[in-house]
Structures are given as structure tokens and as C-alpha cells.
Image (cartoon, rainbow, N blue to C red):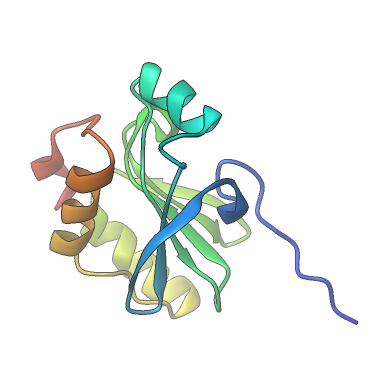
Length: 125
């Protein structure tokens, strides 16, 4: 029997609740009534996680946790972060064959579920 390994925090999707789907991606956030949400909100560190269950790939939106960058795990065996979403999307596609959602959809999720930690317009590059 094969046991799947879960990614380490902050990329473990079990720490968050599923709020919607975007194609093959699960959109996950900390439960608004939970301790994680209260802690991260108080420190200005809220973010959105996009989880691709089949590829077991996690994408975190920019926050102080990721030094204001988009971060995926795993890519080439570890965390991979970029300020520019487009650049990261190309690296993910070439590195593991997974297509990230369109930036405008991710931007909408960020605005809906997590206050911006950095100027969002810069992330589109």
C-alpha cells in the first residue's frame, strides 16, 4: 500500500477549509472562526492556498509568510517562489506540467479571501 506524504506547513492543505474549486484546483483558506485565521489575520499574514490534489501541488498567494511572493511546493523537490505570477506559471508548467489558473482569477480570490499584503498589480508580471 502506498502512503501519500502531505507537504509541510504552510503548504499542508489539511490546515485549511475548502471554499470552492477553480478547474482542477481547490481553493482553501483558514476557517474564519478558527485559531489559525485569528492568528494570521492579526499579523496581516492571511493568504489563499490553491491545492492541486492530483499533482499534490500547493500554491500560496503573497503574504509576509512568503516574503510577498507567490510560492509553490513542491517544484524540483522544494519551495519555489516568485514575485511575478506569469514567470512562476511558466516554471510550474515546464517543471511539472501543471497549468496554474489565470492570474485575474487568482487576483479575485486574493481580494475576496485575504487582504493584499503587497501591491497586486506588480504580481501580474
